[in-house]
Image (cartoon, rainbow, N blue to C red; front, side, top):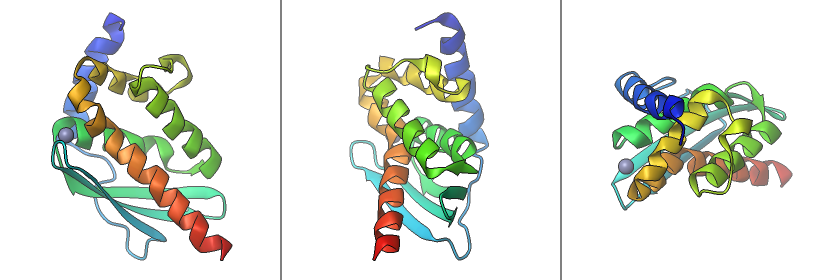
Length: 147
Ligand code: ZN
């Protein structure tokens, strides 16, 4: 873990925890989905707006520890306006990174900063909750469409 990312980790977690971005619920969202992490008690409720192959908006609500809230807040900033393909690639990248297989080089800097959580293995699930929940929400939306 390099020192730059280490310092960034603390700043980013603090900043996003104090002032979560895209915190709320989208009226008339296309998908609502909730994730829960029983290890810590974190709960995240996502609402998504989709336009064809694009995730136009993602907001979240919930309660949890600082790592969970900050990671989910960073996620909403990164995924809004991206294609579903890009979003899936990002979710995959974050999972790989936090499970120790991926590299930060391919990820946006704030997302890379979350990897500081690897020093606290029990907290990895907290950091992943929002991302995992978003992945599930996208799957649900695609199933709904194909029928
Ligand atoms: Zn937590």
